[in-house]
Length: 90
Image (cartoon, rainbow, N blue to C red; front, side, top):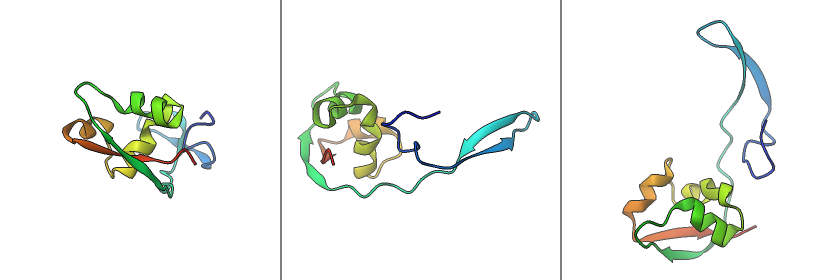
């Protein structure tokens, strides 16, 4: 269900009935990973977190790690900042 880049890859899945009576697979939200800070990126107009993740983490799908280290739920929120914290690759 989740690829190797997903923070949900090792989370236990279970089945639940939705409002329409269908059985669906769900996962609990995992705890945020402990990350160390690589540094800061001065954000330029039009830059997105997936582009930054591709540049600094070598994987655009890891944009959620940038959002997490900046303590935001929605990556779009970062567009209001001038500096964005960047986590280490690991």
